[in-house]
Image (cartoon, rainbow, N blue to C red; front, side, top):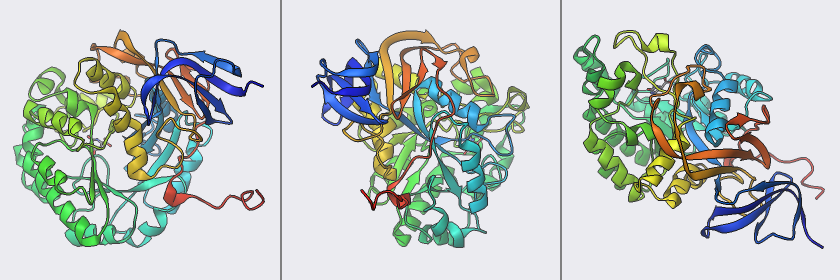
Length: 451
Ligand code: DOR
């Protein structure tokens, strides 16, 4: 008798750990139940994927969704809507909200707010602060937590962990990979006078290469001292890359689509403070070095650092304008455009946007198209050509630094645990995201003993 699936994705080119090749995929109970030639199978729902690529669901490991505290810029509903419209199936959300996610209560509040409102699956980072170091080992193990994040230099919001003894204490406090925003606070403070009023071109002058390099060198040293793995978020300089290449025992590396696509001074001349983010967009030599690091396998994941601010806030004269730009909705098409241009292989895209996250953070049951894994798919048309426009942006900020750019390669469908959530640019099933599970946060299941 032929097998019956809940969903059959038929005729696509599927990216599995064995390679990228034609196959059908059968889904049952939200999980991948079969991969191969399934022409005889029956299914409640069939997705015809001929001519399309079926990729593992894209996991964006760095987004700021602003809830609670700044819901006028974004909230968990609007941010996750932007995610699924762009082809993202899961997000790790950052702790620099108001209040900060530094206590069990704040974390539980975020999880409660997410339930029934978020469209993609999610996990939340716990922020490290001098006041909560003693609680971090317990907090990092709570279900729904992607790990601990420390701001070593100050950026948007109140979180900061800049003193060497405090950083070391936080590193010694837990076991999971700790994510760091790596800029040196003392140097940032010293160099503040270099900011030129009204001129965002001075942003990378203030937050210079050495600010990032010195901080990354120090945090690698402290990670080794503590025997703790770290994840260096949004690496932006050529000078940090050799340090990170020498630190594969302790450090993993993220970069962003904007650092791989934009370059100074052009981006500041064209976009002004809309191009302002931390750490900054730098000159083309850094962008080229980041591309080499992507293609040589030094970069482990690409996160969007989706950091929306309203136009009104961004329009303030530099440096009163806040740092950050949205990106969760454009991550897939921007990277696929690089695939189309030959700068990135599709295999590398898959590794950087799903398998890499699963490997670094030991995500349970996500990150590859393989038997028994969650049926999360980003289905893309590599040939589709469309213009990115502000009017498409679902984020509350309503703008993107890529407005007007024509890209080749777009997500046509977002499927999460077997449910079609986005199809043809429309949200078709909302509010059913659930917490992402991790090896370190698995909880005993009541019915497992009976099985
Ligand atoms: O530019 C940035 N904006 N960098 C960060 O580290 C934080 C982010 C934000 O939350 O706005």
